[in-house]
Amino acid sequence: MEQLKEGMKAPYFEGIDQNGKLVKLSDFTNRFIILYFYPKDNTPGCTAEACSLRDHYDELLMEGFVVVGVSMDSEKSHHKFARKYALPFPILSDTSGKIVNDYRVLGEKKIYGKNHMGIVRTTFLINEEGIIEIIINKVEIKSHATQIFELYSY
Image (cartoon, rainbow, N blue to C red; front, top):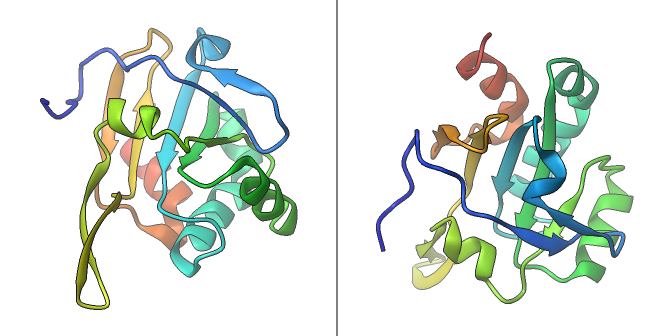
């Protein structure tokens, strides 16, 4: 399966967020989406990334962005994670791996010397027409919001 590239149409997605609400790509027509994929709730890197987006959430909204997170954790796990860190944006539970596969962010990773398949931390900036404008493969977890502002300046 071919990797997604900047300039391609973003694959359709839909999933249940941490509050049991169905969230789909079409909910954000005419909005600029920050769609970020992360490996696991409540891990140091994923927490730092989510908190960076949380801490700059109002600024992101003022610039016209909406934020949507995705991981393969359960809705229940997402609910606890979002509540613990006061995350104001939807986090989709993709336990089936459909969204992860459609966005081609599943890959081989090495942790503690062992190889396994998992989500490769990736962020897609999707414009108002549903086109992928920027793909961030090297996410700066502690300053992810700042990284987005630097990469996408109007």
